[in-house]
Image (cartoon, rainbow, N blue to C red; front, side, top):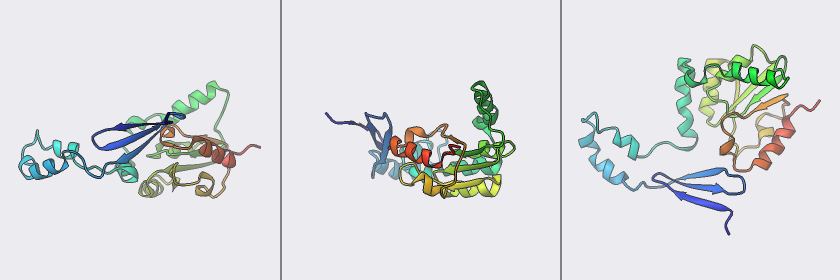
Length: 195
């Protein structure tokens, strides 16, 4: 019996690792209706209620390119669903008898960086990672945070942070994209301040 399960969708092949429950996505080279939609595009574009089919059924950026949309939020300062993140985390940690005051924090895949930006008022050091280098660069430029590019599946965390040590490591929304949790957790231990 295989330890992987494969799901074939319109745009991607999803591979689930049954031992961890995590997924890997592989974009299809060609979508089933791509040629058809591209041939109709000149006719569809002038019709407002129908032209939405073009991006919906056509090729979209995937991988790191897909996540560049964070740059718009960073530049505009529009926090949207990221409003109140720091307060929620502080409240939860307080319930556990923990404080971030004066601590060093690593926020893994913490795009768009508002949490890291807010945490600077409390912590001694905050570093945030982003899947796309352009997003990390935007967080540095517009939010003034220490940010760097890091990919769970292609980078080594201890190398990415240049062997810096942290009191807290947050991975709040992205852990499902990590294909090798054991390797990631071993690297977290390497950069965790245990004193």
